[in-house]
Image: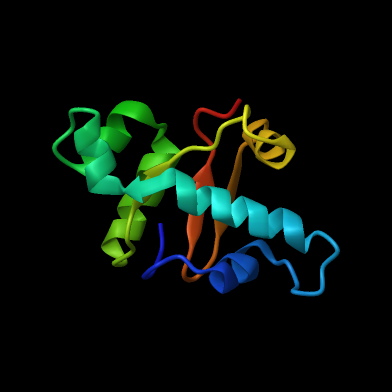
Length: 116
């Protein structure tokens, strides 16, 4: 969920990583995987037979995620849905094996559902 197109800078601010961090490459890689793996929410919902994002989210996610999506929609955020794949590489596998929420003023990433 993002106010406008998700950017690397907004992602860095949301996760609290400094451009001087020794782990910067990890977060650049993660951001790129998020970008590659996500689609506009309505397109994704329709791909799986739902007519709205809310219908899709209510069928596939828990209460907290449903609330987070509805709150984001009410605030004018763009909703994207996607996935990571633990078969791609070590960084992606690391983040697939955990569930987390990144919540900032311009970007919300909810990776609490379907965690590995």
